[in-house]
Image 1 (tube, rainbow, N blue to C red):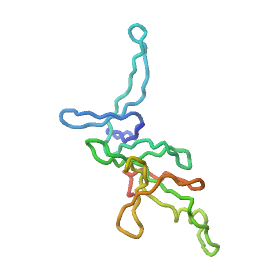
Image 2: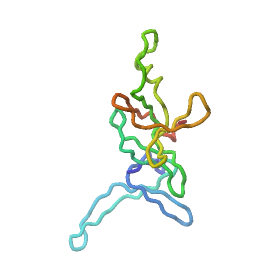
Image 3: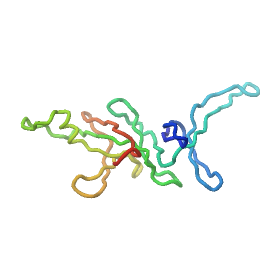
Image 4: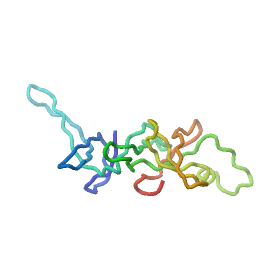
Length: 164
């Protein structure tokens, strides 16, 4: 299952992805609203809406949920288009964090946000990973999207809406 921004500017669409050459240009489409009708000899005919989308905004379902039970989508290398920018921006709190000291004046909620890792979900090395920018160095790194038993993931936006 895929998600992308519609080319006509009418929001996002989810469904099955396909792309083809149209007059020498590659175009991407999402197939949505699949329905059936009875045709000749009572055979089912599958019908769908073909919606043109902006290739750079395409993302793929990761089958991982955030803390609000929302599906997380990730960017991936789409043949002929390169790396997409449709992945979700997420905050991940891993379970290996240390306890907040009593002298720390931040609320527990703010403390947990401050020690979380923020990044974008991307397919890399045949698995979904969190791409994040180092706070110390001017470089990007990859980390697991699995937060552990007591950790949490939270979708905070989409990659094409802002920085990693």
